[in-house]
Structures are given as structure tokens and as C-alpha cells.
Image (cartoon, rainbow, N blue to C red; front, side, top):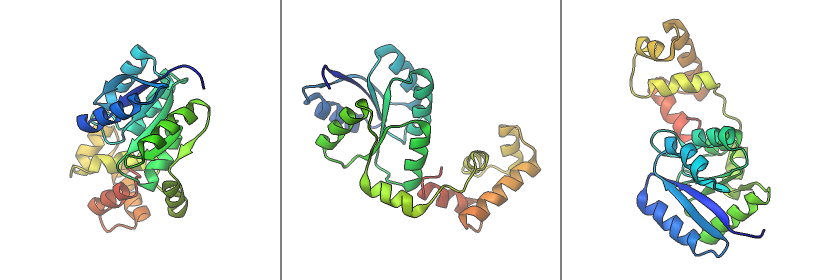
Length: 204
């Protein structure tokens, strides 16, 4: 790979973001051209700064890194996406790959490994943390449908069925059915436990 690799960093923790920027900046062939703190700022920054690679944290306000990855794929398909997260949850890995991310790494990986991942995704490779890949295979597929995840997410703040129905433009009966199925699929006793289990596995 010749030339300078332009990188965008998205992380809501400023100390982590600046540390990553400093570490990557030490690499002769990598330049951090933009930094954002919110998931809903990623696409605008990508379109303005035209990075080769976007490094996205998962847990961000506005949009998650996984949601932002999907929007980057639509707005700038040539940009490669690397998901970097504190939370090594198997379900996150599966969803990240489905959203169009080319790499998935945990934040405690050595800086040299992150720089190597940036180079490798630009060369067309996929880079996945080996322990996460093994855990994802052992865990199996996410059993929840997109709509079940949406309803379960809406229930996470304690909203009653009527409120969830209004927010998602569904009937109360439909909301009740989705929640019931989600509870059953997660093996939970109630919706609060279903939310907790789904989050722990990275399905939400």
C-alpha cells in the first residue's frame, strides 16, 4: 500500500479518541484527518473529509457505531469501516459485519494491531478479533428479528405497550406479540430481563 491512509475517528470518550489519534499519528503511512464524538456526525464528517478508513466506536450518542457503519456504506461505499469497541459481545460482531464493517477489534488490542487492521481493510481484507470470532460461532445466530429488536429497544426505558405502539406506529396487540416472542427467544421471564439478556449478548 503506497501513500498516506486517511482515517476518521469516532468515539464519544475524548481521552480515548485523542489517544487513538496520537498512536495512529505515529505511523508514517497513517493520518487522522477528522474526529467526531457522536454517531450521527459520522456521515457528514466522512463526506467532508473523505477518509479512506473510518474507525467507529459502538457506544456513541446519536447513532451507534453499527448504525453509523450502515449509513457510511450507503453514503460513501468506498470508505472502509473498522469497529473498535470496549464491549466484546458476540452479537455485536455479527451485526457489525451485516452493517458493512470490514473489521471488528476490541480497544485493548495493541496499537500496532489497530494500525495493521487499517492497512489490511484498505487492501480488501476482513480483520476480526480471533477471540470474538470464536465466541460468535459458539453463541450462534441472533434469534431476534429486526422488528423484535426495535420493539425490545423501545421497551428498555420502561414504556408501556400503548406508548411503544404510538412511537413505532404499531397496534398494541402487535407490540404485545413482538415482546412475547422476544421474551421467549431470549429465555427471559419478562421484558426487562429480555432487554438485559439481549444487551449482554450484543443483540441490541
